[in-house]
Length: 299
Image 1: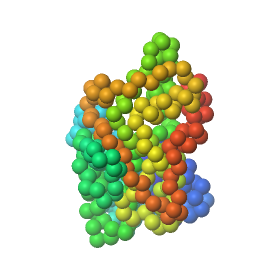
Image 2: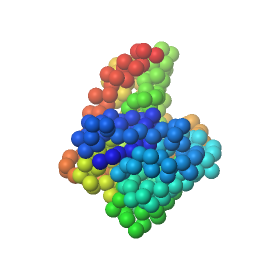
Image 3: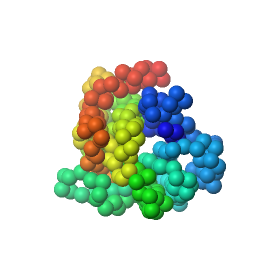
Image 4: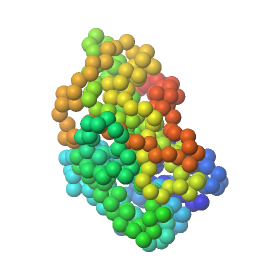
């Protein structure tokens, strides 16, 4: 199977490349990787030429503009990159009989539910911020492109991704915790946002499992097992990395932002073909912590 991955410099894109390189169905050459400048969300007119050049069987579209505050400041640009560009890729793939797996987000839901239940794949989405609205528009345009062949389209929603590269939530918390410890003050972390932390490598493995079983059609929620607040997650991080600091829960309104994150960002996980769920996020943090410690010590 010839697989193309877009956005391969990003967190999930990099993890997907590593997972697909180990997958026997991609062959000895592994996946093809598309990133800028050849693949540019601002130049969707070039997508067809890339498809004709590489002739994939399936495209996993992980490229996106994920700066949620930037999206809030420039909603038209967010809609173009995350909405219209996804639609253009879907149109080009569908016209050539190529399957598409489009990566989306929990932020297609507004996070306002108060019944304590996670969002199911079939629940009606309603985005509360421009980032979520742009990703939801991408989902809608992809469905429209594959209206006559829905079995060729998969939509994968995930949430609270962590892992290399870059300054993910654990790295930001580690840096802030060390600074707070030096200053002898508690670290204030949002306690009224709840979600499902998801290790990028685990989400990538789950996507590969769907592809291997030809089970990628439909909407999938691929997230780490377990629910946590941002403050809960921060406590786990500082404990693993032995930073002597107190975590103080504060409301999200403590720091005004351009974007409004969902307060309840909890997704219900989709069953995988193997029947095994993605492992608990805390177990993934145990694996990730040594690499996080090494990266921090080298700064």
